[in-house]
Image 1 (spheres, rainbow, N blue to C red):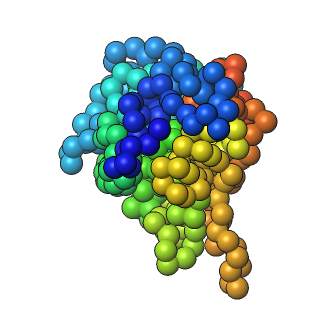
Image 2: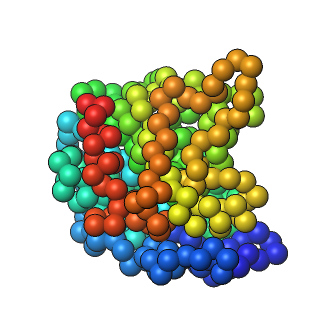
Length: 281
């Protein structure tokens, strides 16, 4: 399943068919739905592109009351990323949250996972720079972030970089491909817990022990545990809990049995995602 160089054989886990070790006993959906489960977005769906140092935009909504910036999953640049964001928007609308979702296209088309992590961190920080200008132009707009799988990593980089410069109402992470201790309040953390708390009112981490892409594949690929499997794990400290105060682990093991289902109608947890977002209004 994994090549000797540390790349995933064949296509990436998110954005194409996800291959699983036989021992993982994946459901049929786990094998196929990352390519087929999404609703088709219109060609002019709103977008911010942070793949270059100077972000570009397409059809951003004008002065919305709220907006969700959605980071696409691994290997999901282009139309399939728009489809993911559009599916999230449709699911949220069906559950009473009637505000726009905007795709954030980041450089996700790489089969070398460590390169994907580096790209995610860099492009998340690029969105932070974009949001500084966006907030200045739209000071009354509530800003929210979301992301799937490795796309759950750049929102954390965005929050870390902003460090209170721009308020972010919520960040919603679906099956995040991020180490379970990378946001803890200690010297080894990749993302500063204090910066996250200074920026975000709430960070919702939706995780499932039935998500074999994270619980098995991520573990085998990185030799680390993922946030999207069992949630955050900051260990024990003499000085108390090192988890960010804004952090909310949401265990959806009973509802989610496939990696790309979180935001999908019928099989996902759209009602919970929408309720959590609206509870912060």
